Length: 321
Ligand code: MEV
Image 1 (cartoon, rainbow, N blue to C red):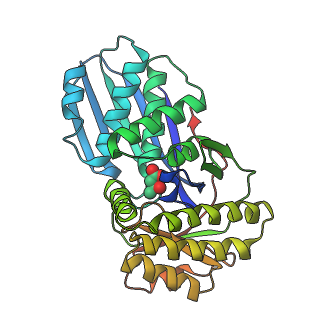
Image 2 (tube, rainbow, N blue to C red):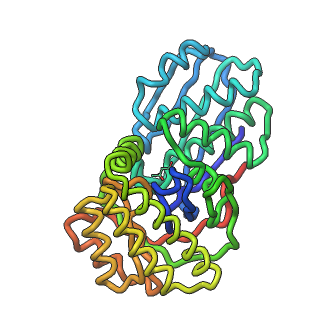
């Protein structure tokens, strides 16, 4: 039975700006979503994904039935169903049914790349159940199309990073792996959920309403360029400073919140070299550069933070078993 696991990610620099072609640097983390898939003979698609709120989802195994459910289900099931639909379209094989079990270590919609990880792992597990082992580039591409369909607008950043692992640079039409380096990352989570679709639309609206927003977005791209140089030099102080400036610019785009700001300040006051929101924003997670691994208690003492943990950069992206 194919088992595919894909990591979540944080953004060191560049979320939102990457949607407009600017450079961004996401980084895979050792928290994963794992999908196991097998062929069944009962003419149904059955999905069990308890950690993402799907106890038992069963539909008839037919194209019309799958397509008719696509837009009616909650977001994470939507990614899974679209990934199944897309992989089946691609493979053109005759199956009688599918059984999927999804296990997640990632909070949903919290900026840690759960939608990319579930799309990558589902596309890979279903394709291999159909007898097709795609290249990593193909999987990243297919998972990106899943995200784009569900969200309306999506960069290639999250799905490329989840497929390839490590830190990657995305922008100006190219996606590249950066040399691997682990970073001392600590995550703070406010227990909330941000809709990527709505937050990407908010930035688009602000950009169309206020022409100067274009230069804020461009400046975030400049931060990523300097950030890549700092990463290559392993200059943690510069990486931290650039993360702080990046957070300020994301706030000015309207995608931060009181709870994210409170956690960012708590992390900095407790000695983090830098801290920023990660992902779409609105609510969810911040990421801090925390070489002394000393900020979790301080984060947890704020009203906003519901959990805090250190996490390693994941060298591996998609893992197949
Ligand atoms: C969401 O994790 C990252 C955004 O930049 C959207 C995207 O890149 O598609 C906000």
